[in-house]
Amino acid sequence: MTNNETQNPQIENVEVIVLGAGPAGITCALELNEYRINCLVLDRGSLPGGQLPEIPSPIPNLPLGIYEDGRALQKSLCDAVSSARIRVDLNETVLNCDLSKLEFQTANRIYHAKAAFLATGYRLRRLPDEEKYAAFSKEIFYNTGSVQGEFEGKNVAIIGGGDSALLEAMERVASARSVCVIHRSESFKARRHVIDDLKADSRIQLHTNMVLNNMIGADGLKQIELRSTTDGTTKTIDAEKLIVKIGYAPNTEIFKNQIDMDSSGHVRVNAECGTSVKAVYAGGDIVTPGFDRIANAMGNGLVAARSIRKYLESLSN
Ligand SMILES: Cc1cc2nc3c(=O)[nH]c(=O)nc-3n(C[C@H](O)[C@H](O)[C@H](O)COP(=O)(O)OP(=O)(O)OC[C@H]3O[C@@H](n4cnc5c(N)ncnc54)[C@H](O)[C@@H]3O)c2cc1C
Image (cartoon, rainbow, N blue to C red; front, side, top):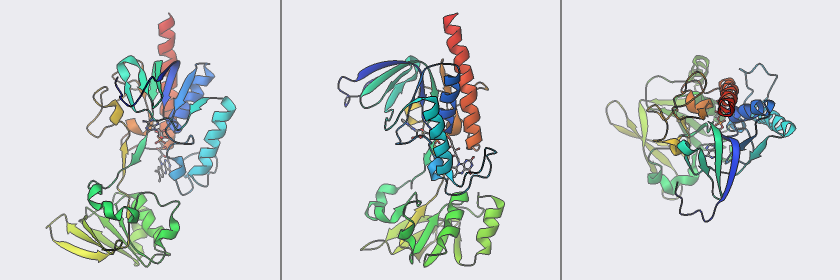
């Protein structure tokens, strides 16, 4: 493993490395703790919880109590970490790794482990030609949770066809001057009732079979140009803010060419959460295309912990 920026990194040996402090990683760590197996959880974020703080509304599909939003569940997860005294090193990005050697490198350290659980989750997909629109970077939003005021009285365009895009449109319409949704195909991927609610709101304009072709404005964004995916024709609409909600991608680049993955970058695992690399297990969103849910991530974390225990026991026999 090479990283020219790292000068004399400290080397640390740990029993198990858990990469990612989201629901999958933390559940794995809690279960390992039950077996008194030492593990270190690494996360680039400043708090455990992964995507949980991005969930803006009540979580309806978890029979674990009432959580008014993702932050409430995140707090409960942080409490569990503190009470079990799990070691979670935050603001630690794993920059590269050699899975065959179970070696993981951050800016200042190299960790060696006997087994690893990869649970690096999803990140928001960004505009594919983002650099082209660098001049408008202040008017392009991927997360809107902490910038609600930005959209008041503005012409807002939202790109995407899933739940996130459609729910965003319905939230924005109360205070924006105008709201439109741009989607590359005819049919939306969102849940049926969300689509029905959106279509019932006559204040929201829909531009289906359209993609972003250009952003226009001398002093800030004024308009966007759309291109038809069916006949290539273009049209221009007023937009001062652009919200991009085009889905998620697995954070698996650092494992590329080291482990068996599908074409979308999801890691392939067996029923025990084992990967194609010995002693390396994986779970959560990075292994479950289409099943990116908290309960699933937690279940994977639990299964992986049990598999890791079995594997470590096999080493000492
Ligand atoms: C807006 C929104 C709404 C949602 N609503 C629901 C819902 O209602 N119900 C539901 O069940 N699910 C919901 N989900 C999905 C749910 O949040 C995810 O399925 C779950 O968080 C996946 O957990 P995970 O542990 O696999 O990954 P994540 O939660 O993504 O955690 C992965 C962690 O890995 C860390 N990481 C990644 N790469 C590195 C690296 N190189 N070095 C160090 N750390 C790294 C990240 O910082 C992150 O903390 C929602 C998600 C979003 C975004």
